[in-house]
Length: 157
Image (cartoon, rainbow, N blue to C red; front, side, top):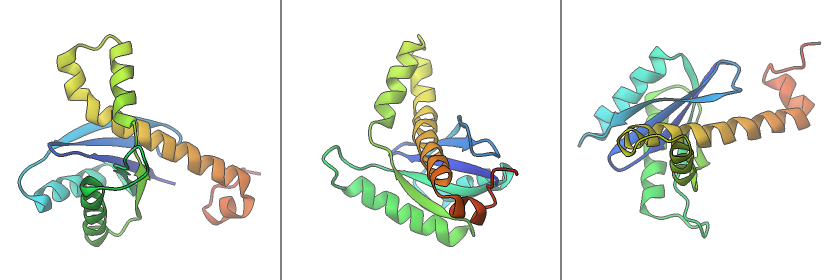
């Protein structure tokens, strides 16, 4: 099946998470510090895609709590379009609402220091929404046997 990369696109930092090859578990992977050049930022992400044998990308969509989209969501849609033009892989968006808050709570609950939390927050947030994405798609395949066969994810019998 191949790995999926989760991207938490932020103003200053881009959190990166990766799934395992079976697309079961999402793990925090790294952070790309934003530059003033979108193309440079995306080139670094493309490098990470190649190095980690990624076969699909999911970018967190910053939807507001009321369900509306704003400037940040429009930026993410533009980033997704640009990335699609740079790589020949599927690029999807996924609702990332509250993933940063959930990551912050998890790190605080794990007694991670404030300094370390700042370093980990973006990649943990990416892993949280990527895990939600993986779980939803695994459930969809479980419920739709025809789609499971189409994707080569049969039950092994």
